[in-house]
Figure (cartoon, rainbow, N blue to C red):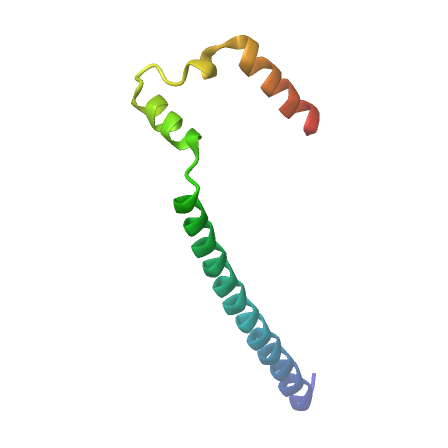
Amino acid sequence: MSVIGVVDVEQVYEAEMSKVRHENGSLKDQLQRALRELRAYQVKYPSPYVAEAAADADDPEGALWTMTPNVVNPLLEAYDVRK
């Protein structure tokens, strides 16, 4: 490859890297805005499941439904079917 070819490849590489960096920054900004909106929504409309999950976490035996075979087995079977 000639010197001119190497310079062209480097310029193309740098241009592509610049484009990727810009896209990366834009995606990070978009994610931060979406997370802010999600947090605001969660504060405004709290989920009843959050309190239930916290109560389950305090229970040393864990959530009762996780140990009930008639609940867990269909859930696992449905997961296996999706794969």
